[in-house]
Length: 288
Ligand SMILES: NC(=O)c1ccc[n+]([C@@H]2O[C@H](COP(=O)([O-])OP(=O)(O)OC[C@H]3O[C@@H](n4cnc5c(N)ncnc54)[C@H](OP(=O)(O)O)[C@@H]3O)[C@@H](O)[C@H]2O)c1
Image (tube, rainbow, N blue to C red):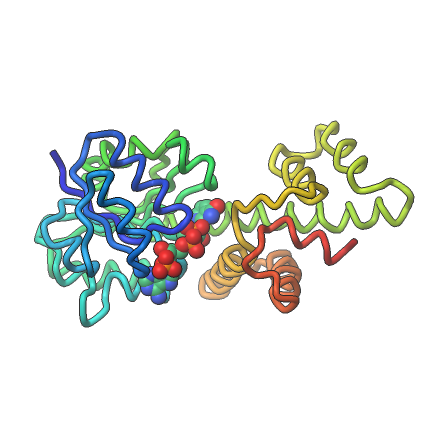
């Protein structure tokens, strides 16, 4: 049975780790910065570690699922307790957080001499999909290393797309989230436009969903934006972070994402109003 270490048990990581544990296919160790989230896994049969290094030291595969580049650097490379230095030769480091391709390359460069393979493996899908093992993985890395972790990803995934070498999964993920955020921005401002022109937002959301030009995520977002329920799937902070990484990656590659820069301003506006920890649907309030 493979030994897997899971680092980062937030909204997504805790659900993904639970899927792994429930599959019975791996022996799991877990670590989280705030110990309570990790301690909850002790009764479920996981080994709870007090540092990333301790979780990772005997693992064949180490998975990180944390906020951003800063958090991921801390988890993998911290001088005291970082996972990478403790990993055994031949093991595999999977970065599932949504991070910049630049950070993935930095992580990759840190592992080469140690014979550890890095795979970037961000996911599409939110909390319900993580809970149901229905995430869509986008993988970048060495083909043989990727082949060797399919059994580990399977309990968490509905689909696994191998995009290319190291960093390509992270790059595609930023494109996917940029497309999502652009749709959110359009829906939010159109609900405001329609309401101010006599079509109340709840009715407008219902109507927009009836047209072939409205994608399923846009229709779902419109429904959330007019709902009174406090659903939390994916925060404004996280989406704004992803837009920032996408724009930086575009600049670095000599490409341009002018639409993404405009969309990011909306998310920055929402953050400035103190809504960063709220669900993405809160951006609609800017236009209401
Ligand atoms: N939510 C979604 O729908 C969704 C979907 C796809 C991808 N993602 C991506 O998945 C990742 C996790 O998202 P999430 O929704 O699970 O976020 P979350 O609930 O906020 O969890 C963040 C995790 O990162 C840890 N963390 C934060 N800063 C850290 C640091 N400096 N050092 C070590 N650990 C740190 C947190 O630890 P504590 O518990 O101690 O705070 C927590 O375990 C993000 O990259 C996000 O963009 C999210």
